[in-house]
Image 1 (tube, one colour):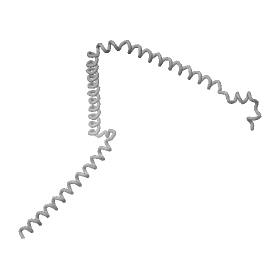
Image 2 (spheres, helix red, strand yellow; image 1 turned 90 degrees about the vertical axis):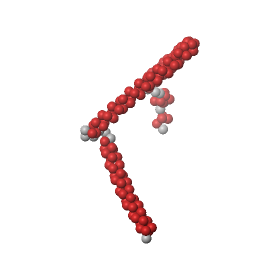
Image 3 (cartoon, helix red, strand yellow; image 1 turned 135 degrees about the vertical axis):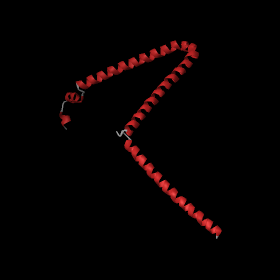
Image 4 (cartoon, one colour; image 1 turned 45 degrees about the vertical axis):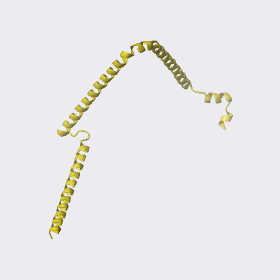
Length: 148
């Protein structure tokens, strides 16, 4: 009801964006347009360079392709060997800290797993001993029945 009593010009000025919102919109639109133009220029330059370089690439492809493969394999090998070296060094550092009693991250999980494995090994040993005694008793019963 209060809106119906306001003049039409005041209604328009209330719903119009503020000057701050207008500046934000104009800035975003300008930056977006510039980015779009630059991406178009980059695409155009890339296509032109590719069209001009294609004959050269075709002529030298018997040399460039094997060289690229060798370069790729060399770089990959160095990265893998470096990665494995870092992993081994990290593992050795962790083991040294664990053995020296500094309790590095994850040592509590290792202790828990070792305890569970020891308990399971003890259970298997006891079951094997019981089964061995059972088999020995059955063998004695069988020999007694055959002699009787």
